[in-house]
Length: 169
Image (cartoon, rainbow, N blue to C red):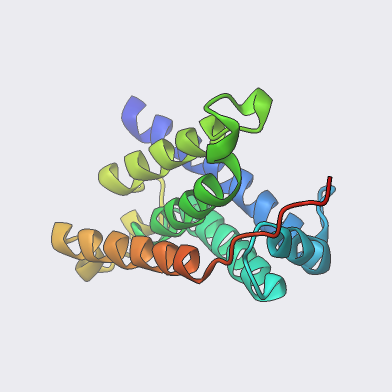
């Protein structure tokens, strides 16, 4: 029972975090910059067209967060979160070191760890998947394929990235 309650808490917290982050990018909610502002930032780090990348990242976070929160269609939600976090680490946070206080990738890694743990253990008893499972998604090979597709998509975004122009001193 404790495991299922712990999974529920982890899913709810991670889901809310990513619903919030996706809503910041897509709608400008919760102090976010919306598509235009996020798109401008993405352009500055070489993700062009910024508006498209902002939409894809925001949608990945929002949909991934909703799926994780509900415990539905696991492992798709966690895979979306991992993909977005990988791109964020490589484009923004890696150069700033490990610690989040310096803008580093510590938070992103914690999110990836949580998403992987949820993907590996499933949503638990208190999830939509427990009530209405999709048999195909519960097969380990399918989970590996979903994660492989998500990682290839993230790598595709990074390949399309253009190095930002250095700021004039």
